[in-house]
Length: 162
Image 1: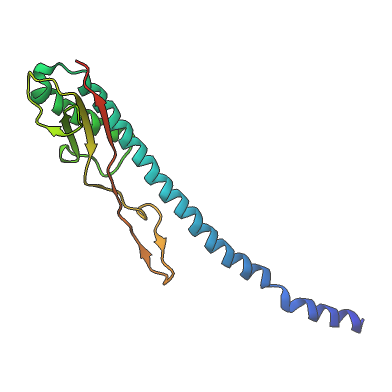
Image 2: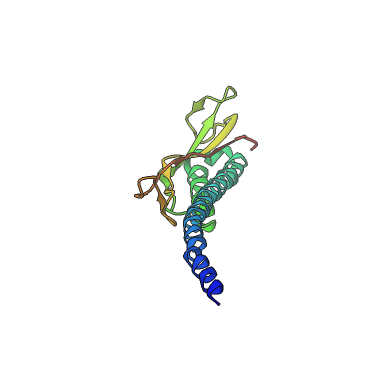
């Protein structure tokens, strides 16, 4: 009987060690999963913005040259804004974030002019910042939460085919 009590006392001090190890590992795993979710969201936004520029560039590349500057440019900007909003991209794009350029055969920017057909068109997203750490705060090694705001700038260039 005495031998059993001695054995029980030896096992008892190790009872909480696994729980402490689990707690330390869970904190690290939650931080890794949070980073995966946040970076995945940024890739999703970039892909949605790229698709928005592609749709807009396709639309303006088929627009009649008579209205390329007066109507088609604004319509392409509105299409990009709508496509990004439908994909759930936040913050919302504005016309200031969507740039429509007419390009010559050497891919240099020239003014879009009604009645003049450019060789190529480009739709770009500019000055669009997304906050990494907006959904799930990322922790630094010091323990402080941080946000990181990279600028996403996708663009699409297409040949103008009136």
